[in-house]
Length: 372
Image (cartoon, rainbow, N blue to C red; front, side):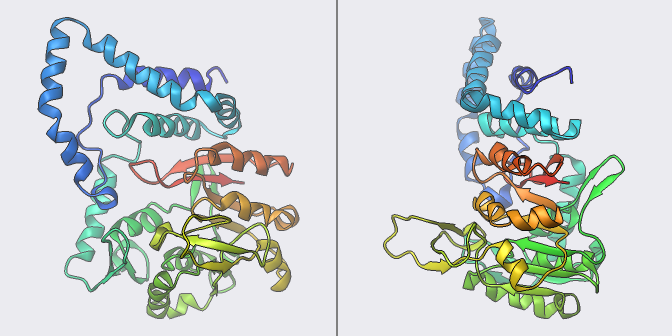
């Protein structure tokens, strides 16, 4: 490999100096406040830039600010980013790593991620049409609503209560599927699947459809408000849902630990400590104990999107991973250190795993590490 993470990162930061994107904001995820606030300052900023440009200073000043911000973002953990860069399987993964970290450092005005293209917006518009006039449920989270949509026109024999971005990300873009040249990392017929982070049931149904009648999906969700929608979605898709088994506990390194619940909706997480005197507790389960208790003779695929508990849950699956060497799709966007700590832990098991990176939004969330 002739390049390095740092070289690609700095070169991309320099190129970003010329950018000023106005079509790079996710209204479904963040609302309009960020963009409106940006526009309130555009007149002043453009006037300021015009003056600096006249003095031939704008590029130098702006480039220095951006590069300093970019370097500050990666400096404390550069060796770890270089490690990950060198261990990623393909150029797409390496380029994504650079772009995602630059986005995290510089923001939506300067960095546009690869998914922000014409095809993305056309697909989102198609899903939005399905939600128009549909029955809806208030999710009790950031003012979000789930819409009852028939998805046959999108290639899925489902009827689901879900937000349009969820349909786009998890079903149309297939967030837990990765293709590298002629190799596809995904759930296939007959697979036994761990679905860590069941939420409203859409990923469990997706995996159950892929796994077929001979497959089996274990999905983990414990929040009552999520489960109320989960059960409605299972009832709407009962033929596929019969392959899914719900475990109403969070995944962790050990079973039987009592952890605090923080947050709500899709952002719910578990913590060993909390400052909230009213925080409720929940009892955990490990994948290794589930495999033992269910007497599983195979485990083919592990998916995790569990709000920062991924590393702990993987440690609770160590015996199963060593025994079955499953394919994995692990979310690594919740904590900065997850980008290297999770693949480094998996590499330490010395099972010959390879790594690829894919990203499924136009903002900094939904980065998935594929392990195969």
